[in-house]
Structures are given as structure tokens and as C-alpha cells.
Length: 284
Length: 296
Image (tube, rainbow over all chains, first blue to last red; front, side, top):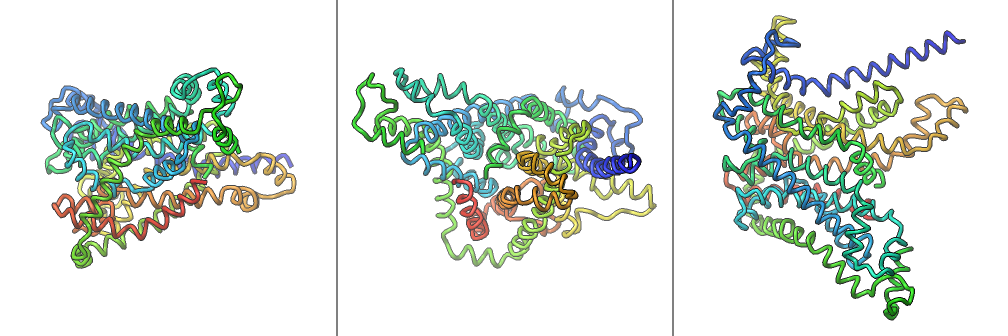
């Protein structure tokens, strides 16, 4: 009897490993391949070895020192990515928290309509909105301006943000608002002094979401920005594709560096992300 | 419930200050509400209504649709998109359903794996997808190098075969978005009361029966919602195809998301808009269904 229990335990572990190992390989191989390129000398990354014979940090040196003509604006382009994603996060938070407050706490007439318009926008596939967005930004005279990408990303991010924030704020007790209003608080004070502090966990989730969305964006970035000093790093990396003699090891090195901040931010705010973002979807 | 009471209260004559009644007058509530929603409404008008209206206006000529239908790439693209939606999404969601069960296991190493598992979703597409593209390079990519080392023969020219290239794009799409849907389904699973499983175990139910009679009935709605949402989003998935195949070889692996951009780059804005309008019959029913589901 005990033997049989033990056997069953072992076979369960074996079955779990049988799933776990392929999942691990499937997830990490493309990322490890990228890393391998980054630490290999030129041409040595193609050999199919698991670890380069002469690992080197030379590629990082070239990228950080902007010593290649594909990357001679590396730091400026990193900075553009940073400004654009921070701008997107801040604007999305402001716009979405205000809208969620009006819909959920003030219960304004037409709040439902606003929510539905936002949901509708959430369902427009991003690549479909990209072409009209490109033409429109041209008409507004914003092409090649950082604001074009910030506004486009805010448009894409805020519907989901409003939806998540509204669901979180529906859970706050209504007595809170009533008490504050009796004490003579204006709705603006209610928003700033009571609503925002209570919503911090959801705001972190939504802010991280908007930040990562903008940082990782490629399509809108390459449509809306083309001047070398205005583009974000993903666009610069995409430009490697247009040349035949591209230094792939540098592309992979720069890409690896670019992937580090979002991974770090995701892990830092993972708790908020999974509870904040999945809660919204689970309800559906 | 709370909504009706507050509105009822607000609709009554405005209480004097200090009368002990909570809430603002209806008109005041409305003014503040408009103020707070104004920024979003401005974004919506300026960057959704106007562009979409303009797109329809550019795509108004029937002649564009004739031209589109005459373009052999267009038909191929529609077929590719449908294959992408039906095959890739269903495979992905079934994998996500299965893996959510795996990640619900309480083992330290499963937890560590779960942390690594989200990486494809959290990091930018461009370096990772290009990394996969280099792996598949027929001459010096690591996959064909290994095939040559092991068998002494040349591996296939992966991205030069339209069927293979489209399948690989689907694999890239799955690689990238599987973690997100797995996490959502995992959250759904974890919300199921544990007592149900304990009761079932006492009754001697095996793993399959527990799934069939407890897990699936609890998360089937969520599963369908996720599948439909994923379909809507995938129609807009530009990166998986564009960064891996660029639509090639010979424009045979385009999907609607990349076709619009292709026309735009060829300066055929009318055709770009028209191709998007053609996708609406595919998208709108899904969107309205989802709106009804989610705006409850």
C-alpha cells in the first residue's frame, strides 16, 4: 500500500516534469539564443554551441559606446523610448482614473455610454487603427513628434485602463463618498484625497501596463516616427532588417539590453499586475 | 441598487447644507462628471472617431473594392487570416487551458517556472521575434546548423515556403501570447472553491472527472470569452507575421494586419483602408458579442 502511494507520487512528479521541461525550453530558447548572440564574437554565434568558446562583452561595448553606424544614436533612442513610455503611463493614468471616477463614483448620466465607447475602442484591432492614425497624425502635423506616439499609445491603452479601474472602484464602499461630501468636500477633493489613495494598487497595475505597452511598441512607432533623432529603439532595431550586411550580433545585443527594463519592471510589479489585470478579465 | 438610491436622492430638492443628506445635486454631479470624462472624450474624438471616420471616407469608392478583389494577394491574405484565427487561436487556448492546470500545481519549481514563463509576453517583440528569425535562417541559423551536424543534410529553407512560414508565424504568435492567456485561465481556476475538489476526491473522482465536472463548468464561460477576445486581438497582430516573414515569400504570408501596412507603404492609402473595411464583417459580430458580455 505504501509502496503503491510512493509509486503514484513518483509518476505524478514525472508527468509534471514531462510538461515542465518542454515548457521551459519553449519559453527560453529564443531568449537564450538572443543572449548567446550578445556574448559571442562576430560569426561565432552561428556554430550551434550551447556556450561560446570565447565569450566576450565586446558587443555591449560597441552598443554602449555607439561605435556602429546603425547604433550611433543608441542612447538618444533609449531616451526617446523612456520619455514616450513614461509620458504614456502618466497621461493614461490621469485620463483613465478621472473617467473611471466619473463613471463609477459620480455615477454620471452617460457614464455607461462612455464605458461602452471605451470598450468598443479596446476591441478595435491595433493594426487596423494604425493606418487611419498615421493619416490623422499627418493632418495634425504631429508626425515625427514624440507626442504622436504618446497620444496614439494613450488611445490604445486608456480603454483597458478605464475598464480595469472602473471595476476596482466599483468595489469601494459608497459610504466613503457620502461621508466626504457631507464634510463639504468637492468632487475634485474626493477624487484627489480619497479616491486616488485607495486606488493605488490598481493604478500601479494600469500604469505598468501602459508603460510596457509603449516601451514595447513597434508598429505605431515605426509608422509615426521616422527621423533618426525622434525614433524609439525598436524602430532603430527594425531598420537593421533593411540592410543586407547588418551586424546581427549587435542587433541582438541592443535588443537584449532593451528587453531588460520591461522584464525588471514586470517582475517588480508582478503582484499588482496579476491581481489587477487578471481580475478584470476573470469577471467577464 | 446603490445607483438608484443615489440618483433618487439627488433628484429630490437639493438638501440644505448640514441637513445630513449625502450626495450632490444631479446637475452638479453631471457637470463634474463631464469635467472628469472630458479628457477621455477628447482623446476618443480626436484619435478614434476622427481617424475612423476619415478612414471610411477614404475607403468610400466602390472602385477600390474591385481593385482589391482583383489583387490576388488580397484573397490569399483573407484565407491566411482565417487560418490564423481558427487554427492558431484554438491551439493556443487549448495549450493555455492545459498549462493553467499545470501552473496550478503547488510545487516550488512550478512557481519558478511560472515566473520565467511570462517572459515572452513581458519583453518587446522585436528582439525576440528577430532572434527566432535568425534561428531559422537556412544558411547559418542554429536550427539548420544542428540539422546539418546531426544528419549531414541541409535543413529546409524554413521561411521560403509559404505554408511553413505561415505556420511558423503562428508558432511565434503562440509563443508571444500564450503566457497572458495562461495567467488569465489560471486566475479563473484558482477562483474555484477548493472544497469542490476535496469533495470530489472523497467521492473517488479521478483527474479527468474533476476537470470534466468541476473545472470545466466553472471556467467554460471565461474560456469562451478569452478565445473570442484573443481572436479580435489576433486580427491586429502585426508583429508575429511582419517581423518573422515580412509577408514573404512573394507576399504569400500576409494577414490583414500586415496587408494594410503594405498598401500604406506602397502609398495606396485607399486600398489600405478598403482592406480594413473588408475585415469588418469578420470583426464586428465578435465585437458586439463581446460588448454585450463584458458591459454587463
